[in-house]
Length: 506
Image (cartoon, rainbow, N blue to C red; front, side, top):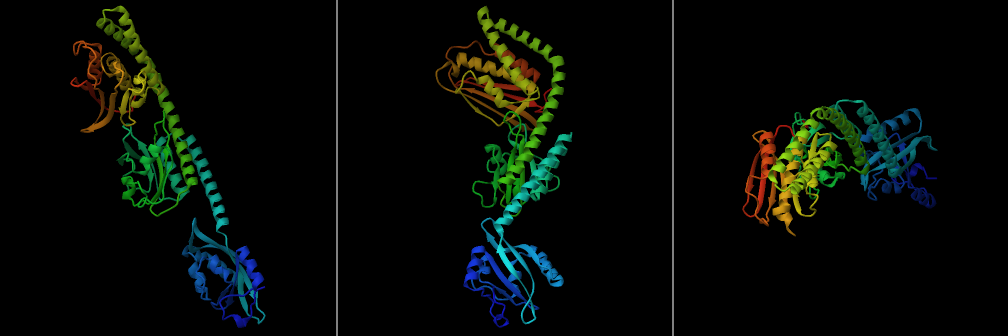
């Protein structure tokens, strides 16, 4: 046992003997004694190592003990000690000291009580040990339990709530409260595929939620999450290589954060869910998993709402869609026969157009006749000629009726190229590009087709074919669009179509 000889109180280190010292070192435990009353404190030498203090830095007073603790824990520890002195009951506390380990603060557990010394005086004595590993495991378990409970609670709420905005608001509130972060957000990818919209959020400046827009920046957390489809963790936005940071984060002094994808339909994301702090914080995979669980609940609820919308739209569409379809088929047949004197060729051309019509109808009906991804429409039209197209454009969506008509125009462009242009030759590619522009407050869908091959044989006179009449009927009259055609150095077709509502299906 360590010596408590009063004559040795002038020495700040207890000497428990060689055998006992070895045992204490192996067990990671140090012994201390605090003489009462007063501030004289003695330690076994290994307590300096346990507290991550330099050898010889202990001054033999309670000042070292006080200064070693983090301030946020000091009041709690001293209250436990005072209760022990007052009631003569042992105490046991855990606190963080100022040293930092590889994974965060060092946790110390102290246990002690009042003992009577041979000379009749009293001292408080006990042990200290490093319990960082044990505390971290316990904290991790508590964190995961808290996150699981939050996911369960949010899932129950989302299942019963009918208002999507209320679900999105609860999602960011759940993230903020559970992760203990001041900032949380849901960014919605708009129909153009090039802009993010702050749909819901906690902690941001007043007026930003519901109004803030920003481009899909490749160097931002949200942009990288959208591009990679994976969780993105940023330890320090100021020093992270390759991050420019979304202007929203920069303007709020954000340093650390984690972002995950909110899945959408047909591989097109709905947007991004993120959690952020101004101080540097090490988010981990468990935090990302929790965020993803919340994002998946949101995605599933959005998908359910989408199904309900489609059901209502389809019921309305069925009333007049079949009549319109028969009229369109009849027009296709009349125009095809009118441009062909060869009956067999007319049958073949009509069959191809009818097949294109069916393909467009199938693609759009799959989405409930609400909205369609432009890339899917282009892929379907160009599928007979793999590897012969260079396609460029954001992951935009347009309303179903425009997509249906654009599918017919695409079929004619592909057919003409296979007869007279690049696709009639053994090599070469056709360039297809699209984008959505805003002009004077109006959204314009821009589509370009560039076939740079010289015609393999003379075409029929310009403006007299089926394609010209189809464009005139669909793009000009129906949609109020404009077209431009250039024939120098190949064939370039461009159409600009004004759109009042990109996602409306009717």
